[in-house]
Amino acid sequence: MTVSEVGFYYGTTSNPSTKVTASGTSSPFTKALTGLTPNNTYYYKAYVIEGGQERTGSVVSFTTPSLGTVTTGSASNITSSSATLSASYSNVVTGQHAPQDIYFKYGTSSGNLDKTAYYNNGLTNASGSFSVSVSDLDPSQTYYFKVFMSVWNGSTYQEISGDVVSFTTTAAPAQTGWQAYLSDYGMPNVSGLGLSLRQSGTYSDRDDKWYSVDTSNSNRQIAIHTYSQGAPSNAETLNYVVLYDGSKYAPVWTYHVMNTTNWPDNSVGRNEDWGSDPAISLTQQTGLDNASAVGYSRGHLVASEYRQTTVKQNKQTFYYSNQAPQWQDGFNGSGTGIGEGVWQKLENRVRSLAPSGTTMMYVVTGVLYEGTTTTLPSNGKNVPIPSHFYKCIMRCTFSGGTVTGAQGIAFVYTNESHGSDSYYKASYVTSINNIETRAGFDFFAAVPAAYQDSAEANTDASWFTSGSNISSIGGNNWGSF
Image (cartoon, rainbow, N blue to C red):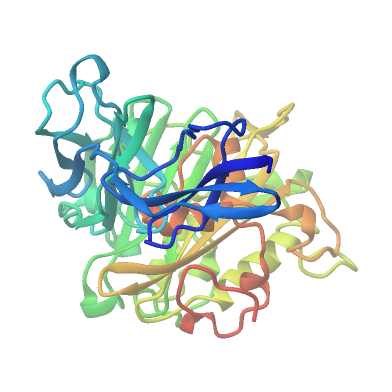
């Protein structure tokens, strides 16, 4: 009878079932197997099909050679932002076919090791150890890591790996004085501005212990304003921070926190008392005294309604450093037949959602100068008129001092009347990432990346526009409710 097919069954049990066909039908016959696991026992038996009937031989076995082992070690030299990852290996092929592609994968989830750190020095011994340093880590964060390497299996390179191991970074070093305010969770990243304390002082009429911070840009200074009266335990508490640009006669951005426990809302009203900011030494402060004559107003960045604990605390929002030329009717304020402007509506919404307890809502407000810039004559100066105003919002929940959830959204408007539009019209809603790109700053830089990244990419405003009890919401993916 004629033999029509020959081959083998193979597998990892004594009853192999994976079938592979050999070339030809003559005897003896062979078949090369690929994709086998190192250091593993395989079983196989031959078969032939003759006259339509299959006959098989006895089951025999073989064991694939070991490619060696690589073991994920521990992390050492752990700080709030860096660590050294280690691994060991044994009985791997070296020499002409030494291991290659030696690296660690790491991340904040054991199931998503999304960062890579390579070992680039090469390995020449069959056994040994190696390590790689990683940086740009978040403080008080658990990281997971795993080692990988490719070794020669006799015909090609094959990857082997170790187990997943974890470590936790230390807490961020404690900051003191003015530096502590600039390391707050909601602060933009100002580390690249070349900061140095110029001076500090007290403005008792506004309950203001202020700090003046120079930057590497001679046109820009940072002002830190604090208050004590009415604050928890009457202790010095951050009121807000402003980055002021003397060449624009206006703030670049302001940063403040909304939380009614630390910043109680006592509805003290609008205590308008405009004046120069004592923490800004730049002479280019202007009161925008004639702005209303051409349709603009003194547009607060930190709204008066956001600081309602005491009259003195509220007066701090009336520094010239906290204003920029802002279109009035149908934007900053009400217009005839229009009702509240979009900016006024947004400010009211932010105030209504101020949380209490350990939940914090961080707010960065700023201006953009995009396209052709027009100017507003004021007190002998030509003040550039911003093309846009924006507000970036990041809301975080905490367990102790650890962030447990975050959600973000941003709004941006051209500096003109928007009629009776809703403040959250689709064209006004954007991501924090978008504003960061346009403004050239990294906002909310201290929020752990595990929460910051998704919050800053979010463009769904429903959590902000529809939420009525969002102070009780936790986790990283707050939805509409």
